[in-house]
Length: 218
View 1 (cartoon, one colour):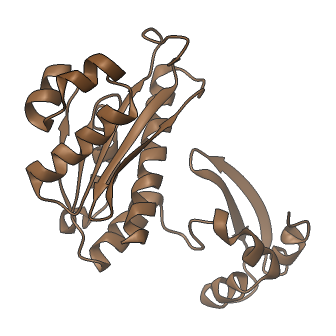
View 2 (cartoon, rainbow, N blue to C red; view 1 turned 180 degrees about the horizontal axis):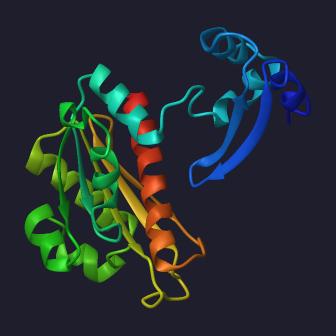
């Protein structure tokens, strides 16, 4: 797509790549001009313009820092309802100083009873679709948003393994729900392969990315 990207970036310093859960970080080290100048010029590169739909940041913020920064600037409040991630999404967000400006709280709804009693998830949805489903993830997010009165609620429900998977919903499947003024929706991701802790980290990273995208839509 952009065969000249590397050579275009090397005009500013030493270039290397670093794969992460959120994609591939491309780093420029040993800058030959001020950082602010480099950021401005990089944004105008031909290759960057071609890749823009796939770039979530040009700068040095972590994903969590960017979420807090952009949510705070828009005066948005956030909460999470987590099952498979066990509070990791909330933990990542609250690792950032200033997160209290926008992050309200979380419910770790690990059991079905908590999902139904605290988040108003329908027992019919659980029985018909299973807890790892778009329907349940959407209801979790919607229920949390109504309960906490936040601008954006995010939910996670998945299978981190090593047991609990099926042919239809294998280990490595996660449903991520969002509820905001733009509506209620969810998406299922499948076929991630890793051990339990790494899958929880992958689920968390994907959830944070979904949250950032929702913030930017509002």
